[in-house]
Length: 545
Image 1: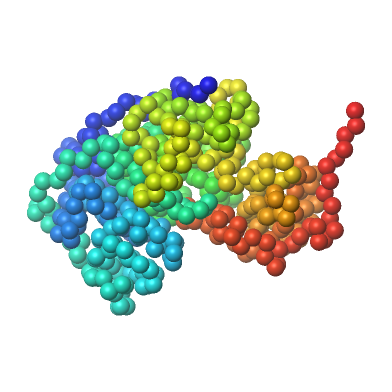
Image 2: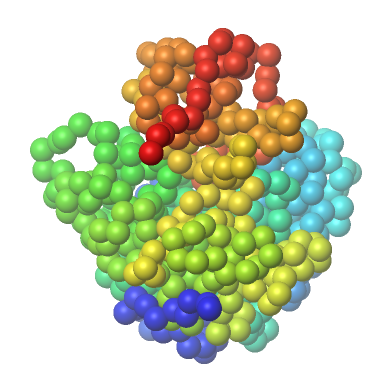
């Protein structure tokens, strides 16, 4: 039977909030009226905006977009790095009831053309250094390009190109704005495309509210969050939006950098951050001890996964931590207790969420076995309604009335859920399902390995061989045969890679996810080392009764 959520952080109420508490325009109106002189936004150049000033700037930008023809329900394409213009474009679009459609700044070629066509914006805000990438693609419905920065090239696709001054509107001339509701879409957020074509996730204000408050709702008016995740990713948007909900403030920077992280935290008195994901925790842990390092304002951090290294880092710098599980399409269905010691766990189903782990036929698997996580929520509109313009993908994800995450988990007897792998990243070899995450964990334990991606390599027998693509640490050299000798005693025989490919660095998304789709596309290259060709035999150990 399904697992029904019974855990909830004390700062989250799973009931339907009024629009005044979860929609951009009325929230911004409220804080500009009640705390006009408090600082809301801080930017990398040190500029600070109060609630009143933010309100005026957003309304002015909204009026400018309105003059360009943007209306309620329209898409506004935003292809910019983190910064003032991107922030204003988001809030101004939502102030008009339009959809915020940010594009990954790494997109180019066919993938870029796909998201532009899918979002269908009439107005596209674009950084000057990205304009050249628009020259050779179909701009679909785009009528006007607003170029941020100096650009002297030809207008892409013959479209009208305006400068940044086109966004200098008149707040007083805006007039009435639509009564946007919690169930309306605030934007289309594109998945990172690590397992296939990027999908445009339709996200409602209620989903944004639930995801943000569950992840960062511990903030109050006295708190400031360092936002170092990109604003075309849910980590960047959820954190800023929660500051809006809670009357807190944010400090927006371009990206995470372990060399400047603590300086940023201290300089602008940040009490939390938009998240420490993937290798970020490891990077901070490797910093040499420094005098007074516990003297910092950081109070609590959302991160994952939780490991013994997490505990050491938290104790070293004196902060608390929380973790959970989220993806662009849902709203943090799994949440762990503060400072959990259930290492590797993503927590338990929160109140209002039903979770099941199922096999390929949607039949629930027993406790302890792995299965795909599928979800549904008691609160309408708190998960995506589907993928924009992709009805087949929507139907597949929502089959049998449950949202299928595509993520494989296991559950223990205490109802803790443990992430195992992406369903598409699972490797099947000779009847065994192999977690790429487990392979990567062991490879990363080798002292010369900086990063690794484990992928399936096609086998003539119809199943897979295990392949790892590895990058060495600076100043080191990886010997594939020596790496295998290191791995053989550390993992089951069927997990030991057959193929080892060595590269300077692995391709990654701006959110630090390895692009395994790219590694799979390249497959076994001429420079890939093959243990079979090297005459290294790995066999199952035979046991006798």
